Image 1 (spheres, rainbow, N blue to C red):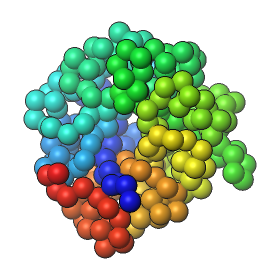
Image 2: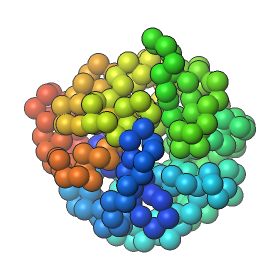
Image 3: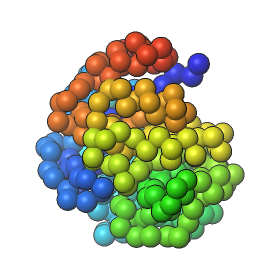
Length: 255
């Protein structure tokens, strides 16, 4: 059985860590660096930083935060939001990122996926998909932090992007995000069953058991957690213990 990764997701607006519901109504939580360090010390396998307002400025504004984090944290770091070119990717990698997550620019210019994969490796190119249910078994991809419709079918887009070189998919359910009602398991299963790369389930984790559901029924390879960690309703250790008790294979702390 594959080892499931426990990933802390930190959404950033300006200098602040924020959290919303359905990617809206953003509330300030605190310092991104302080929270990232806490999750690292708890044993998070990876971290994700997402610049939530990057589309407003046309570029990612997390350089300083990424540099600060990379000095103190030694697990893979994915950075997303406002990435529009290979030069943007190079800059973030030099700041300390290990991977980049691209959404809006990838839909506008699918060739960017291939360019990033060829220049920096497919493991660096994470396709970020913000998905909203439109019918039973159908989801539409959104851009600009869940604000803009694209008319693009999520499953078909995921398959195409992997063919273009995406090495991983960060799949966020807009419907479930921030609700604490659990992941959209059907969405994750629909994508994971059609692609050959790891799928990170994001949006909706309310309790540790939700991880078990999305891994066993949804075939997720990893889970991205935000609300449950930010509000201290469970720690990484609690979530890891729940996964182990359910028979899932997860990385031991520090390994």
